[in-house]
Image (cartoon, rainbow, N blue to C red):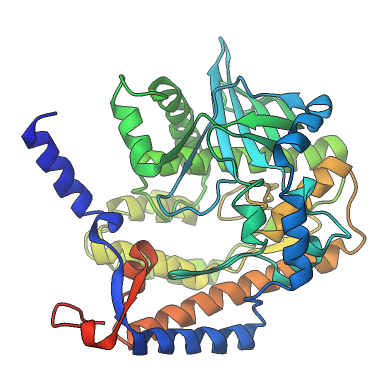
Length: 439
């Protein structure tokens, strides 16, 4: 590697979040942040600490892991020889989804492997009861409140490379001409991830044919890009049009898997599930939002596309940049109703323009996915499904509100929430704070 290449790579790394290092804060600021968190935890009934019984159960379920996986091979599909990998942010703490891809004459065959959390967490267990109380993982900048004990989420339920893991696999045959499902199979499996990629590493694999997983990533990106363009053409709202290729791969694969699972539950099994329902704004609300967007400078939004407001917004977003991009996004979010969980998919998901949709791909951090895993395997529903839907909806709202208020507080005391979220924090003694540190 040449000195010029090395210098360029070092400069590029210095511009990344990990290259800049953590945000340095004083002990006093750290105390203010801790007090604010406690205040929010009390207001929104967020459970920061796990009861000892939950932690003890998690510890028991993470012992003799490899032997338990070996015993499970008699009851599961063995996919350990299938090329499989994960792609996550650089600071990801657990890896609950992995993908595999193959190309056939008329189909793509896409496997989405999800950590089999319900093998360890199920109704009647301490961890299940605690997950219901928590509802979801809460993400505050540089501070995470997990739905499941980290001892579980970061070990047996994390699809780390070079280790056998229990998974719930969604195997999809996707037609090349229409991108519709030819066949869907959902089953318990044992998988073996070949590698853990960050988004940055994924981008490099796409560009460099000499790197491992290059062909697989190119193939899955080709499929993901087609799925993405089809969604936009069909009227799915895409609020972030400048996403990189790695994000596109993961987003589209997870959307397709979620759609496959709820398609299977609704049409082939006819069972209830925890569906994700998103109402649409009223015509007056949409009219107000579109007029606000049209008045922005440099926005391209042709009159012909106003028949479908989502397509009009997509067009506006693609022509927007900088502050205008944020203004378009805010104008839409102001009029968009909250999505909620329901035991009936009536009304579908308006923003995605899906008739039926639900969550399946993140059982470590969302109650909805955990419950849908249990429903798929048991082919039955919990007796209190309606109450669980309401619980998941309410706790998600609480988590989002707490996150917003915490970020507002950080700005009030001179911290940039985006920097903290991406770089973390380092607490230093007050006498170490110098003129180069503003926090």
